[in-house]
Length: 332
Image (cartoon, rainbow, N blue to C red):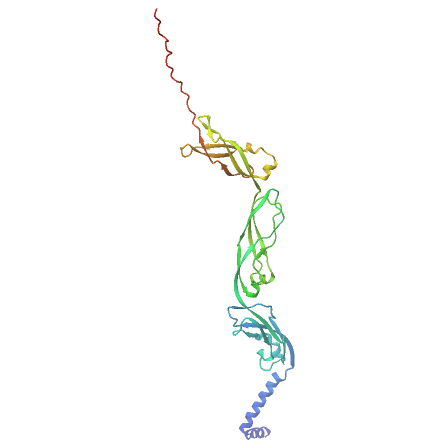
């Protein structure tokens, strides 16, 4: 009987009241799973995302890449906030060179419904925008130490000898050249090739990173120019020594300093001859070292460079007339 009466009572309930009862039940369920949860506060780090930066501009300062956001909401939503990929977007589509202060208001973070942003630190993001330029920098070598005695550093060739850098105009305008870290040449006696890092300011390192180049060191023996006078020109023909004019020449030579220290007789180091290459009697003077040298010796100048062969005249016996009266008989 009681079951029948309950069904009869349900039957007489208006339909709109049935809808209200269903809505009430759903609201109770939602309250239980959402509204009934504990409300918690949490600090999360949110990345700053720069978008639409013009191609001819660059951010030249170091700014905070993350901001701290304090949020409040149901425990399940707050704990899941890290999986939602939140970010603080900064749109620079209309940016111009200069300093921009971007305010961090609470509504710039797009949080889920039911979660509230309480505070953002820092309150603003400061960006320095600069013109992007390209500049060519020569690479200059820096050396320390002293070569071995009597050796000189003729040249240092850099590979590359210049570097092109693209970056903020205000940064690149502070520099004119790039320099190597010190190259130690102490005691070197011969040419060599080394890899050497560049000595870079941190602002340049931020643009191109640590950079190493190749240095070719051209090292040679130190020489001294000397003039040697009155060297006889020796020309032989069929084993016979010939006369030339002039008979002596002077030469200018580049000699290693080490050779001069030994106080060698410089005239003994060379012989001089001449060759009639064009068969015109004008003989080109040739200087020939009398021995092999440990370090090269260079002949810089010959004075005069040409000599002339002196033709010897052949002596001829003169014919003699008979003496008057010779062979004649006197009259008796």
